[in-house]
Image (cartoon, rainbow, N blue to C red):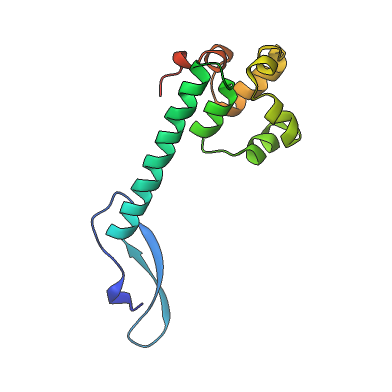
Length: 131
C-alpha cells in the first residue's frame, strides 16, 4: 500500500505498517486504526469473554477446576500453562479435574496462584476474584 493509503480510522490503538512512499521506497507509517481490524478484534475478544463465562459456570457447577478458568482468563492454553508451571501438559490437564485439584498440595496451589497473579483463596474460590 502507498504511504498515503495507510488506514487512519479512529481507534484506541496504533499500528505500524510498511508502505511505499512516492519514490517507491519502503517506509514505516503509523496508523491510528482500521475499522475492519477493530471490528474483528472486538468480535474475537467478545468470543473469548463468552468462553470465559461458560468456563466459570462449569467451575461453579464443579465440572472442572478453577485452573481452567484462570487459564482462559489469562488467555493461556495448556502448553503455555504447563511451561509456566514446569510440568508436562498431561500433568497440568489432570489438575483440571475437580477431584484431582482438591488434593493438590499448598505448594502446587501457590505455584498456580503465582502464575495467575492471585492468592490461593482466589484460586480455590473464583467468586473471590474481582475481574
